[in-house]
Image (cartoon, each protein chain N blue to C red):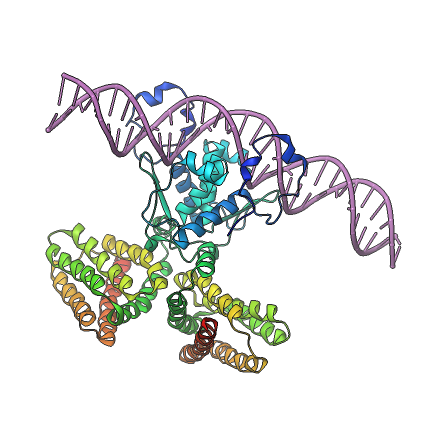
Length: 260
Length: 260
DNA sequence: TGTCAATATAGGTAGGATTTATATACAGTC
DNA sequence: GACTGTATATAAATCCTACCTATATTGACA
C-alpha cells in the first residue's frame, strides 16, 4: 500500500533531488499520476466511503504532500470519471458507485487489483456473452474491406504466435476481438472494448493455457473469421457464442482453482 | 456558437470587473466548465481534428482567454474522457474517436447536439434492443425487495403522471428503465445507463406522444414489471423486447419526420 | 555514429484574490 | 407567535499570476 512518493513534497526546490535523475526508484509516474492512483485506490477499496465528503483542499494537500494545483488536476480527472463532485461551499463528495466509469482503464485496473469479487468477473463474462456474438453478427453484415483485413491480420498473428509466444498470442487475441467489435459499426459496442480487454488480460493472467487448447482456440477463431468473411451473421453469432463459452469455462475453472 | 466568455481575459486583476458582480451575462457556468464545453464541442464537431496536435499552453490560454490553471484542469478532464493525451515536449494530441468515452454525459450531449448522425441513433437503439431485454431477464432472476420497490415506484409515478405531466412522465420512464438495469446486478449493463438515458431524452424531445399511446405504453411497462415480480425471466425478456420495439419505431418515425 | 548541450513543452509549486452556496440573523407579514 | 423573505457572514471551491522543474527532442560536434 505504501508508495514511494510519500515524501513527494521533498522536491521543493533543493537541487539534491534533481541532481540524481533516475533514482526516483520504482515508477516514473508523475506526481499527479501517483496521486491519482492513490485516490482511485482509496475510493475503489472503500477506504474513502462513497457518499462521504472529502477534507478540504488545504488538508488534502498536506495529507498527500502535493500542491493545490496537482490536487485539483487530479480532482478534475476524478470528476470526469464520475467518482466525485465538487460544489463550492458544500465541499467535495464521493459519488455513489453507480456513477463511476468502470470502463475507464484506471478504474478497471484498480478494481481488478483490489477487489477479489467473483461477481465482478461474472458480470464481465455475462456481458461478453451478450455483446460479442451480436457484434460478430453485425460485423458479418457490415464489415468493409479494411475491417476484414484487420480481423484477418489479427487471426494470422495468433496462428503465427501459437504456443510459442504467449505475449504475442494475447496481443493478437485482444486485437481479434476488438477488430470485430470495431467492424460491427456500433459505437456503443465499441465502448466495451476496454472492458473486454480487461477481461481477456485477466484470463491470460489466470489461465496457463495448455498448448493443446491453442489448436482448439485457433479453430474456433477461424470459424468466426470465416463466417464474417462469408457474410453469414447467424453463423458468426453462433461461432462467437461457442468461443466465449469456452473462455467462460476456462475462467471459472481458473477462479475456482485460485480460490483453493 | 458564440459564447459570452470570449473576452474572459478582461479580468486580469483590475478591480473594475470585480466591482460589478452578476454582470457576467448569460450562463452561470464557471470558467472551467465553459472552456470544457467549448473544447469538447470543437473536438466532437471535428473543428479540432482527431490525431492533430493542439497549440501549446501559452497559445491556448491566449486563444481562450483563460488562465493556465483553468486550461490545465480542463485538459485533465479531457484526458480522463480519453479525448487527449499530453506528453512533455511532444505536445497535446487529440486521440482517435475510438478512445473517446461517449458514455460520458457531456460527450453524449455534445454529440447529440452537434451531430445529426442517424447511424448514431441507430446504434443506440440497437444497443438498447440487445441490453435491456437481457437486463430485464436478469432482473427477474436476481432482483431483491429494494430493487422491486424502486421499479414499482417508478411505474406508479408513470401512471400518476400519464398524459398530464410530460416532465414527470419522462423522469419516471427513465427511472423505470434504470431501476431494471440496476436490478440486473450486472455492473457492465449499468455503465450503459447514461446512454439509455440520453436515448430516452432524445426520444422525448423528438416525439410528441399522443395521449392514446400513453395507455399502450403503460400496459407494456406493466407487463415488464409483472414478469419481473413473478420471477419469470423469459417473459420479462420478451415484454421488454416489445417495449423497446415500439420505442424504436417511434424514434425512426420521428427521425424521418424531422428530416423532411 | 554516438554523445552532449540547447531548447521547447508539459509538469509542478506557491500564494493570493474572487466567487458563490449555505447558514445565520434579522426584519416584515399573516 | 409562527412563518417568510431579505441582508450579512463565512467557508469552501474557483481562478489567477509568477516562477520553477523535469524531460524528450533536436541538432551540433567529436
